[in-house]
Image (cartoon, rainbow, N blue to C red; front, side, top):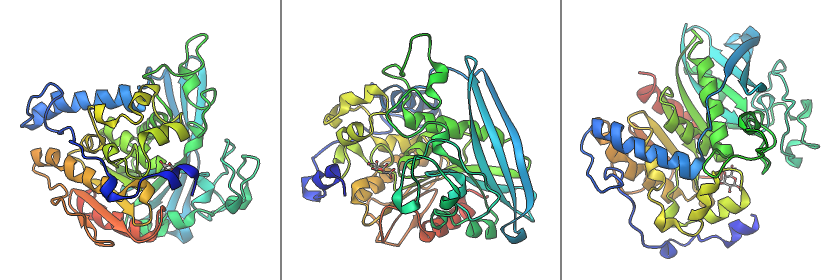
Length: 405
Ligand code: GTR
């Protein structure tokens, strides 16, 4: 446990009293009573607020988007799956970045729904498949995973297979698409690398105050990956998945790009699904201090000042409505504030009601390992901050009902 984690509040009796901004009352105090008012007024103002004051705006459009099929096989996972490796290139101001997406699709169905999610250490870490290429991008060192000199190598192939229940997905008729997040923007407080510099004007060396941090950049990368995925005739729906910091990115991607058919946030915590006003576990001040590159600089003014925020994270969840949304927590992951993640689903649910969809349906947090699975779903499982088979079994079960149909 790092210093910030050991100093945090984990005592429910010390959670400050607060009033949450109502998702169905506009900033100027008007009640929102139907889908049109939600979509044309309220949704728009909430989205703009998160864009300018939390994650940061993408400064401009790309000049060019391109992709290339690098490799494909009909014989992955013992003949169960097709594999594709795609290079995606984004260009702006005569500069470009290229990132790589690994896709497995179940054979037997002409089209399949797909889970799209970033991985932390390279596509080759999510599978033992020897044909998956190894990222050449900067990677965070990790002694336990054998990653040194910020370089991935053959020795880290398959080290994260336990987080990706790929065979379960394939056996249930789902595909999987994954990208190494550091190829969009390396996860360090440095705005000279990754996608940000493509958009700089002469003399600029970092994004402006209300422009994108890394979470927004990662969300942008997912959205551009969607440009490829929607063109692939073998893919039907795509729902975006992410764990922890990448769960924050998945939520923001789902909020900003309605082409995603559903969103899964696994242990996303502060700046993800958890309510900031609870100040339980990680707080805005702590996250902005440990990870100054994740959010827009404009978010800094809410350090230890949550009361003045006109939004809270339940409104981020509401931006996903009426599409299916799954938020999951882990019992030992107090840093991510499981109760705050659950309550967010509760306070977002009234927007689902406008569409006749069933939100979470109760303010009472479910027992451990007892998922609630409506259009809005939630579970808290035993164990630590991680992605487990239990999580995937539940995502698959829920997706069978709410996303496949
Ligand atoms: C932690 C961070 C969390 C979460 C996590 C992760 O250190 O404080 O917000 O994002 O990292 O991504 O694993």
